[in-house]
Image (cartoon, rainbow, N blue to C red; front, top):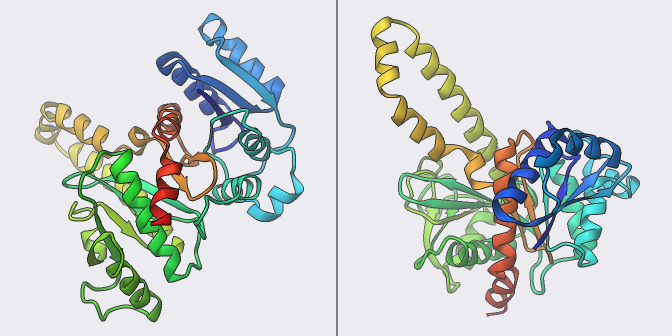
Length: 329
């Protein structure tokens, strides 16, 4: 298994990406290709000395696409950027998967341009895996396609169903459509047509999902357009961070709360682990003809390591083949 890492992508690149790659090489035994500035990467690997696994190699890329650069334009202009080089390695069969925590739009553009889409798929979608009160759920799309058609959301539902069945081992997959109300008549014409398509499909579609039900666990897959999905993603991340700060403030207000916090530490640590995005790696880019995992821009080394593990699972379980089979039905 050979997996390419966009070493220069992300807020803390390349150091966090290299650390995550080293962790993955040690723990999982994969061959890792770090794509980026050879001098910088080699210097960082040298610092790790004998601890840097020999299964890690470097593929030089002279350019970097910044997190705030225009995606499509940068992909065309910076042909030797780390994300473009990584996408070419994937296209040429030199690696089995690509992991990047860099500019999301650039990753989508580069991979879709080099690899194309899976047979029958109209638009790619990014799926976020997150915990609920009952089980893991998938929200798709969270940013790849902000102006979709109803048939695109139908395919998102199909791809999410495949992911739940083959990656997360869910036997019965309940699909919902994110909307402003639970009633079938609610929403825009776009949403109503999407509802009709999902309802007439072979999926186990159980209707509209209101924002307050996203984390209840009543749904296994929730489909939406990329604009709304990205807002949900960013609000969720911000809320989790804000609640953490509020909790820390309150626990410092008095000696009794500090004692209570100390006694509750095991529960707090368990909760942190359960809701920590780094536990789930990254967001799969579904529908492209190649395995790609998009990490959070602020990914930790642990998140990069788990994204690499997730990418390998996609390859081993032949998720893309299952998607094509499901789309063809």
